[in-house]
Image 1 (tube, rainbow, N blue to C red):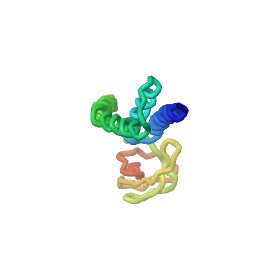
Image 2: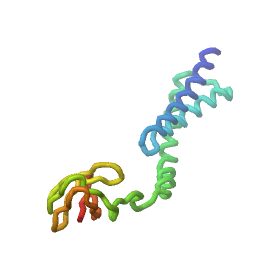
Image 3: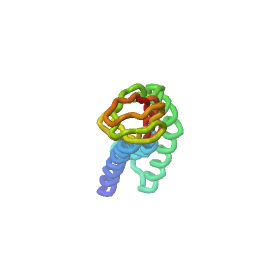
Image 4: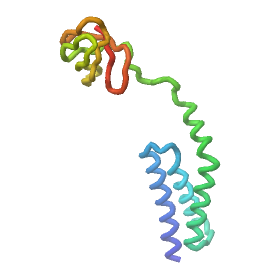
Amino acid sequence: MEGFEVSRWMWLLLGLALAALEILTPGGFFVIFFGVGAVVVGLLDFLGVSMSFPAQGLLFVAISIASILLLRKPLQERFQAKMPKEKVDNMVGETAQALEEIPADAIGKAELRGAAWNAHNIGDAPIPRSARCRVERIEGLTLYVRG
């Protein structure tokens, strides 16, 4: 009886650990279903459904795979529908400050929101040090600015 007691707690703890792992990793709803499988096997053991450990393992795999196949896509669609379609934080149009003189069509450094960025001057005139410049676009970690 003690072996069954250990296995039910093992399944429940495994399920909780896998659910926590899903929260901590950006996996897109995958690990959580193995957590669901483990919790279901542990709860069945608590409810008195007696199975050998290999049978519990097979049930865990079957429930996990079935829940992935049945629930993953609908859950992803539901959560992605709530995500904004456009970029949430757009810095285009904001004002940066040149940290050094940036010649025309050259790259220098500018500060925006307290961070130093590579800044490509797309204007016709140089941007003096400490001058304000407007962010026209962003590519990667480079601001394209105009004085």
